[in-house]
Length: 353
Image (cartoon, rainbow, N blue to C red; front, side, top):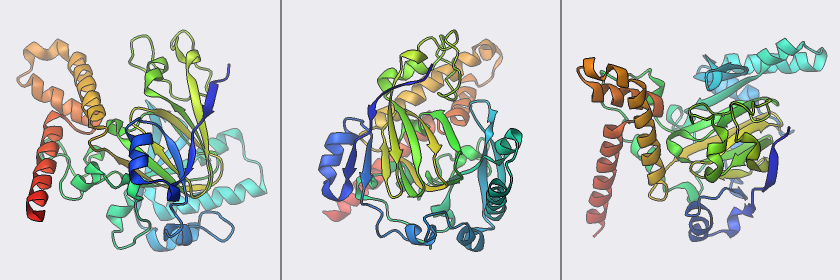
C-alpha cells in the first residue's frame, strides 16, 4: 500500500518576499515553503558545481580533501538512523568517483549497490573553513539564536560529562551534505525540533513532509518506536495509524531553498548527485518546541531508569546526563543558554541607547 499524497509544498520567489511576510505566512504559522532566487551570488554555486551541473568532486578533493567527515551508509540501518563511517573528504570523493565509473561500465550486484550508497552528512564546513565564504545566510533565516550562541559558547560546560569528541558537543548546526543519486535520509524530525533550511547547490531532491498534527500516526502503540522508511512495507500491526497519514511532497531543484518548520517529520531522497547546505536554528517563534521536546525526552529518560532510583546516589543527575546524550542538551544547558543569550541582548541594547 503506497503513502497518501495530499498536496505539494508552496514555492515562492524569495526576491519578491519581505521578511515580515515570511514571518507571518510561514514562520509564525509553522508552514514549510520553497524559496527561489536567493543563491545567485553564492561562491559555492560557482566552485562546487561543474559546467554540466554536477558536483565538482575534484575541487573538494583538492581544497578540502584532508577534512574528516561523517558518512552514512544508506544501505545499512543502525537503530533509528543509518550506519555512520568516518573518513576523509578525499577518500569519500575517491569512493564516489570509483562507484560512478563502475556504474557506467558494468552493472554491479544489488549487494554492491547497497555498499555504494555513501552520503556525507553533517559536515561542519563553516566552522572548519571560516575564511572560505561559501554562501550568505538569507535574511529570512538570520534570526538564529542557536548558531549565534554556539559561535561564542559550547552547548555543554561540564567536562566530566561531555568531551570534544562527543557528537553531542558539536560546534554548530551549519552543515554541508554531499551524496550520489539514490542516497537518502530516513524519516525524522529535526534536532531540538528546531527550524531548518536546506539549499540545493546542485542536484535534485524529493521531500515528503508530515505536519506535527499527524506525527502520532508514525509511532507504535506505545509512542516509542517511529517508522524508519515510509516506503518500506510498514507493519499495520506495529504502526496502526501509519496508513492514515497524508503527506505533502516537494521536488527541490538546484538553487531552491526549503524552509522546514518545527516538528514536521520528513524523509528526503536524492534524485540526482547532490550537494546541499543545511542549517538548524531556533528563535522566539519556536522556542516552545525546544522546551517541549526536552520535557518529553526527560520524562522518557526518567521512566527508563526508574527501577534504580532507590539505589542511585544522584538519580536526577543521571537523568540529566541521559537527557543530554539523547537530545543534545539538558535542562541546565537550556537555562544557561537562555540566560547568556538574553544577557547579551540586554548588553547590546544598553550600548545602542
